[in-house]
Structures are given as C-alpha cells and as structure tokens.
Length: 462
Image (cartoon, rainbow, N blue to C red; front, side, top):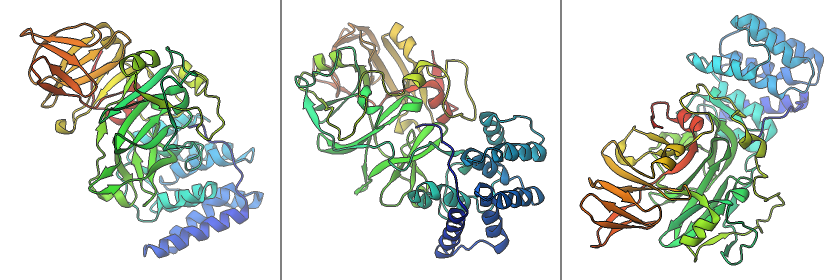
C-alpha cells in the first residue's frame, strides 16, 4: 500500500457519483431521506473544480454541522488537489471540535477513533460515492444499509485501486535447481501442504501481497500484509464454497482488507473473516495453516524437492532482495496510523503470532528475539498446550505438546522429552521413535504493532 495521492474531482464527476449514490439506495429499497441525501451531494462539492461550489459546500458543512461530518471532512481533505481547500477543512474541524492538531492527519484520526463512533446516517453512501470515483469497483464495498462488523471510519484507502497491487494467481513455480536468482540468505516464506513444499521469496511477494493457488490439492491464498509484516496461509474453501479473494485497496488498522469476487465483501486479513458487506452476516472463518519465515538456503536444505516462485510473474518489478518497501522496513515509523500503540516492543519488532480455534478469544504473541534466545519454549493458549522449536536459522515451528515436557532441542531436527523419548521434527508434526505424532499448529510472524492493533487483548511474551 502507499499513501493516497491528491486527485481532482470535477463538478461532472461529483454529480455522477451523487446520482450513483441515490440510485444505489433506491435499488436497495433503503432510500435516504431527501435532506440526508442532499447533504451528501452538497458536501461532495467541496472537491469540485469550481470555487463557488467549494465555497458553498464549506458554508453548508459549517451551518449544518454534526459530529458525523468529522470522518467525511478528514477523508475529503486528503483527496482535494485545490491548494487551499485542505487547510480550510482543517480550520473548520478545529472550530467545530475545539481540537488543535493542525494538519497532522494521524492525530486527527487517533482522536476520532478514541471517541464513540458518530457517523453520518448515510456515511456508507458517502464512501461509495467518494471512492467510487477513484475506482468504480469501490462502490460495491459500501452499499447502502451494509452490514459492518468494524467501524467504517477506520476503513481507509491505501492509495491503490482494486487489485492495484496484483495478486499472483496460479503463479509459475520452478525447481530449487532452477532458482539461480536466489541467494541462500534471501528471506522466503515456506509452506507445505500434503507433501507439496513451496517457497515464496519475500523479494517477490512484497510486490504482490497475495498468491492464490492450489497447493497439495488444497485451494489456498497466501496473504502478505507488508505494512504489518504478516504472511498468513488460508484455505479458501469453506462449506463447499470457494472464495476468490483479492486485494481491496483499503486498510483497517494498517492491515490490508481483502475482498471476494462473488459478493465484493471486505475481509479482515488477520481475522480471516468477512467484516463488511453481504458475507459479514455469516459466520465464516477461513482455516489457517502454518507459514514459516526462514532463509532460502535453510528451506532448500530441509526440502531439496521444493518448488519456488519464478521471476516470470507477468509483471515488471524490481525483484532484487530488499527493493520492495525498503524505506518502510528500514524505520519503526508507520505509513498509516492505528488507534493505539503498545510500547512494550518497538512497532516493527517481529512476534510469533498464535491464535487457535479451540482457544476462542485468547491470543498470544511471542517476541522473535525471545525465541531466538530460547529455542525450546512451551506454553498454552486456552486449552491448547504447545511447544515452539526455533532452529539455528531463527525459523519458528509450533506443535501440540500433548502434555509432554520437552527438555532438549538440537536446533535442527530432534527434540527430546522429559521421559527421554526422541521426537523428529517435520513440517507436518513431531514424530516419536515409537511412531506417535504431535500435530503442527498454525502460526506466522507479524509486526508487533499490527498484531496488537488487531488483538489489543493479546498476551505478550518477551
């Protein structure tokens, strides 16, 4: 994602999106009252290329001020190309709210999100109209009367169109021997499904943020939110329905929102659930699988039969190591603000993120630096007891412990429990010399700020 750039909205465009909003509401049999619709139509003229229209819109907002105008004014202030309009909107915000944040949008947003939501009664119509101008596909995200499980004013545009960061769909994979473009030290995200081992180099995936494929015969989507440092592997078929996922162009708490092609519902990436739109009313939870963040040489050593992404993606990008998001990854600063930060770790310190279906609302984050120093670690989340084995390369793997106490790990392939039983580490599970198997558990790395923003009640081990 990137910060939204200024764009000009002409009078004709404003009229067109206002008409679209009204038509959408009528089709949904939820026509807004005339005065409510009129307010949206007038407000959008703040972005007109006509000075009189802009002046009239600003006067209207001031005379008819309600708290629900705050997020609308903030959003319009970032999309106006007129030199003076953003400053006028901010001055109006200061006057009506008695807040003094100047032009610091991040502070305005944090203040807004710290208060109880007080949106305009047809805020979704406004968002459909405003962002539908940038990409007509955005209109379907915010249909009138939509169901939303998150605050709409926390849904912000990431600066790209729908699939503007193009997902890799059924990408070309090559053998390890053919992957001469990779150095052993390059970071890869490794997965294995039904014996099908694959590696997705960070240097490629960071440009695409998603791959959609069938791995080991299982339809999956690997979703990479570069902003929050998270790659999650989801099975995309649930209850017989295969969800075709893509990148929506919008964010929630600096975490990318996915969309599904069939309904244009928006999905929370970290939750694996639809949160806005037709599917939000259904109890859909995609099944997570594990992802290991490791180095190419280490993954290839463990999996000489692995396949890996080809550079032939159909797109022209600089796929050299570290090229994508170099500046963002180099600092602890955020590109998009979040409601609250937790200073127990730096924003972009990596944690191993654990959330298990059996554990309900409990979550756990373990600092990657802690696990590097303590390569054998045991804990529990809810009723699930587990062991984390961190190999010499720093890669983490999580397994059920089944009540066993593990006392030794050689840093590579062998663990030993308190009874002296040896267990062999595989991607599928831990296998004892006697043939007993302890299953692998889903886990992935994340930046601390991103995980905390999604799960502020998470427990942290550091």
